[in-house]
Image 1 (cartoon, helix red, strand yellow):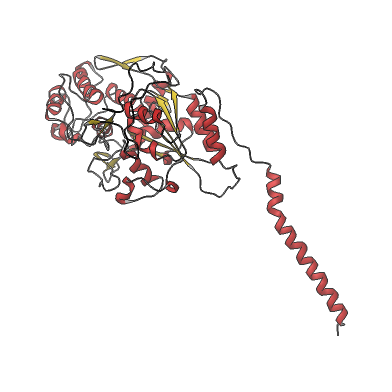
Image 2 (cartoon, rainbow, N blue to C red):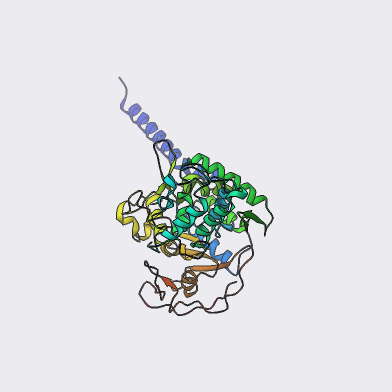
Length: 431
């Protein structure tokens, strides 16, 4: 039989062992953290205007994973526009020119150009039929890269690039100016009949050509000389990488076609799953149709809501924050919005305004955008000149108090703050 004092001694030893084990378990995470070393916040490279580098660095210091170091916390979201924000020039334009030079746009079904866009005007449809009608059977690629197809290429380029025919007639009518730009939407619609994989191949070819061409180069499309080069902005590429290293969830939202932006975004380390471009509907065989995916209350195929002004808000809410239905068209609570946004155009207004901490504007002299950025009513806007070939100072003030805002029906009016007060005209000061 075990003596009582022996039992007590054994119980004491067991308790001591238990306490020691508990202490070891409690200190293991701390020891592991010490072994991993201190958290180091990545730094942004130089090359920014004024105190913009410091403001951006402060954003990273405030929202990055080192303040405090919590690896499991929800990542803060950063959203960049693409064309003329992350790159100089427009990858949608570059793609359109490549398609025309290489004969990759198809004759529409029954030769009816109105099937390519619900907004195409009768005058534009007639002009396109006159220029392109006899060049290929319905559904076959048009020979726009040949001398015989030069007139067709010129008409297509005019409608896309100027929203007018070569004779000056309006090419599009009846659209909501804050949810879609018909000319932008027309590019992916003209890609009907190709698969996403094929379009990515077209984009890779156009990307290689435009990056290899010297700055300022032009190319021949139809009978015209057009822009023939694109460059990544080094500062923006660096910023994207630094944000990612600091634990931000970085996205691209663009009014260029989805597969095209996917290919270009690889160059700054953003994967296809973090790109939101204009998206076609597809056939059962995976070929693009001339219709577009919808967002919010807009159904697929309605072709009225692309990644453009208020449409960018909708698509960001839908794809990044999981908001469904009509709610995606509305401003969300701060916890379900991006902390940082970057853009260069009035097309970026809504998603920039939604950013809760900092908004970077690349100055291209766009009225509503610059009115809001220079007004800076909440202190969260910063302005930077274009990193390559910056624009000169705009001579006249921005017409904020009169015509700086374009309404849904296309009418111009004053730019208003969130409290409805009118923003006074602003002088261009960052160039």
